[in-house]
Image (cartoon, rainbow, N blue to C red; front, side):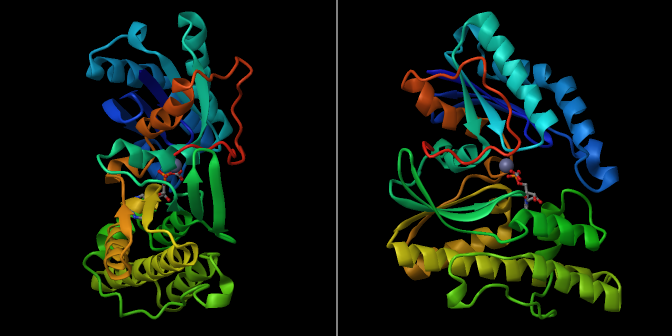
Length: 339
Ligand code: KG4
Ligand code: ZN
């Protein structure tokens, strides 16, 4: 079964062709970094307009890369939400128009369902049940994935998401947008012991909840008192911040795996591309004896292959959505999630 995936929930216009839910035949991502960089963050209206400009070209490029035409497509999977409403609508309406014109079944996919499914595009993916650490720009949570349609949230952030913390700290430090990548790069040549930052919510009684806004404030206070450090100092501050986030994420992941007795753990979402989190979790896996699954970096951040992978399950079972399918910026996580 060939599935066309379309994604436009934030600042990436993406299209992909995935065969039988696992094999990627094409994966095209048009980044809008250049559009938003000068504003230091995503400008929703500009994002919508750029999606409109790019969506057809991106889709046609994906079809070309896969060496197929729309006639070969068996189903369309499109991000329904959550995300920026104007941005979401672009891929969704495009998908509905194609579905209607070509009589191709369509399914709406929850964006997190997509992130959780990215791992199935790798050669090795976790069996059920497994633990998932979801760390993106909008979400930070630990979930137990018991099987098709059985997803239990074990803990989430009380305030900022991990990616949001990276982006806000990057902005404070005058680094570019999107912030995570810049902090990650600088952190790799910094000394994490140079700045003592608070480790939020690490005490046992806080359970599996996260909080990152205090950490951001701690960095803000350093900047207020000392100004933005230059040269090596900047790298050291990035390293200290990153190490703190990683320590908290790794500690809670170990705690959740032990508590739930889970031997298979996946991490997904944009922050899963971070070098520190990948290394920290790999070390924890070795020490604790769980098996770690991490998508390749390009499939951690937003892409359409993960949306196609997530939608394939429903399409393969003959399910489809109607033309009343509409974008939902605050779409709740569906209970039928299949990863
Ligand atoms: O999953 P994603 O592409 O979009 C959302 O669904 O939110 O995640 C984007 C987030 C941004 O906050 C970005 O700064 C962060 O992921 N990110 C990173 C890295 N690459 C992307 N954070 C830390 N280190 C990275 N290498
Ligand atoms: Zn995402």
